[in-house]
Amino acid sequence: MLSQRDQERRRVVKAKGAARAEETASLEVRTAPLCKLLAADLNSAGDHPFSAIGAGRYLPRRIIAVGLTGTAATAVVDVRTATGGGGLAIVAAQSFAALSSDVEVLEITLGALTDALLVSQLYVRVTTPEGGPGTVDLFVFGDVLE
Image (cartoon, rainbow, N blue to C red; front, top):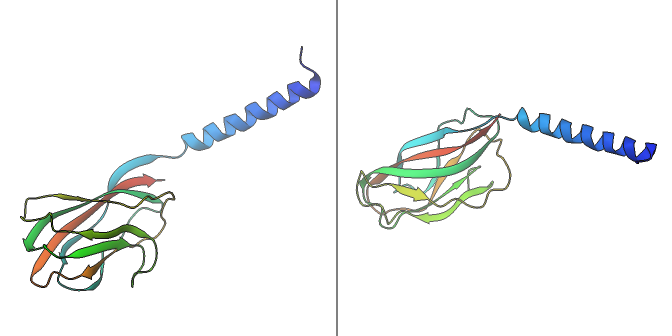
């Protein structure tokens, strides 16, 4: 038989567990398109903003490049949460050399994200311009945590 003190400890532990379960149940997670950048200029060094993100708290899971016009043989980009190479690098330097047509799809490798993001804008930063005409459409998908 448990002492009164041990019984009270069990009640507290159960109450805390129930509170955590209720908090977790109220968190809705859905995967959705977060933002896009159409005709990103791969020959223009610098920052190019994605469309605004409508979610308050989110976690990017995939970035897709498709719709190449021109070439992307030497273009290198990263995706960041701030301009000028600042903020968090969601994608470190990524070559687009694997893209060779407008129907080919490149799934861009994401960095290891451990925290949800709250910023309302992401930026593609062209670190190595193509050296000739080249554009691509970029789409960001992720978990909306609301």
